Length: 206
Image (cartoon, rainbow, N blue to C red; front, side, top):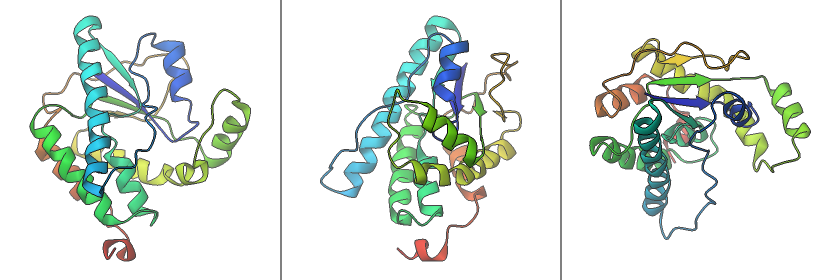
């Protein structure tokens, strides 16, 4: 099975994986690329996700269970930025179209289980200030993404009950649900997007 460890920046995802998982697919450190147009940019980020998904599938074949530090399906980031009014709705729509192509081809999908940590803003700030090993660009925006991230995975959990576990247990890896047969189902992706709160009117008109 494939398990994703997710949460806002400084939620403790990487530390938890290092402590309890051993081998895992690391978070992408790909820099923002200056693509010639918005469609190319959308394809770039979905391609990054597909590469991580392929790595997870390889690790699953080798170890039985593969853990990912953050979700290879990063569409929630584009949706969250649009929901906050920090990016245009059109950017999310473009990335959704490319993500649907990747799902349809079986090169990207939803993990069988998602462990989501949602510390409050004060905790995230303290953790950032206490971590001298890495820089966290756009920290303020990422903290704002906490609520859209919760909305995204709440919608997934409502459509696929038991798939989302709202914790990174201090005692280690929890009991995981059964593997899913709908990892790459475009229908689940479309239902998830349809279950999300409406985007702000000002963004929809962008």
